Image (cartoon, rainbow, N blue to C red; front, side):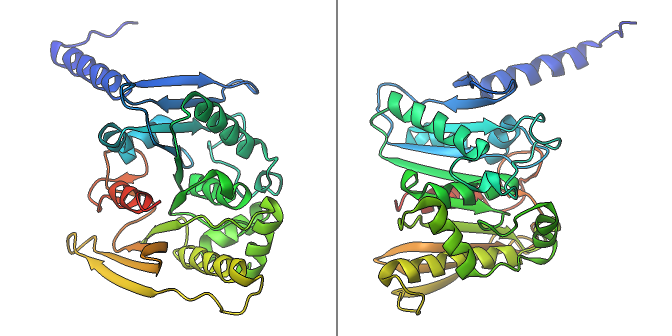
Length: 318
């Protein structure tokens, strides 16, 4: 039976559709070769100005790529900064909750199907836009887990990264370990995960990384944020002289509190070398498992400080 729609409800529906259409008016969709349902959304800027930078956006569990695009509001920055955005979407055919399978051993390799999906569409896009000189990647939760894999297994592809509410590379090697790491923190040492990253990539290129985490995160324990910091410190220590011997010295470690409101204050710790933050740890008081700031969307908290702007400010160093 058809239900009658009031003029008010009809107007609301039309406005919703128009707004939705407007948000994605400048996006195209790539239907990838492979299993049905693998798609990536691509935002391309004004063609009159050759884009210099590209950002890969990786959504979390129970999200779509469009949820993440809306929630982060990265398109606003892309419009102002003339960026290309790539937003791959995980299919429920690969994970019932649309999670990237960051904890699966095969996926934590250069040949992992999810890693290869991202690298393939990235390479295709870069071939179309040879003006791009800087490639960045960011994700939340499971998307942050995939971000960790990408920068450890393909570091030469990325200029910088941001991991929001996520976990370090090889923090878990299986579903049981993933549950333990998410709830209590990983038991894998920084030396172990650094060595695994080196084994995966064969490269000693370091990817500067911002780590953002809510202090009230009930899904991914905030201990994982500090574990990423230690992983990256160990990379820098080993890469400078092929030994883990605390030989790498930062020029300074700068700690700043950014007032937002009494609910969502922000503490930033920047590990500086050559006037640039090699590691930036951002902890947000009062934030649960959600993207801080942005728009109303699943797993986004618009009341929090603008993490998208913080990330872009970090990326611009590289």
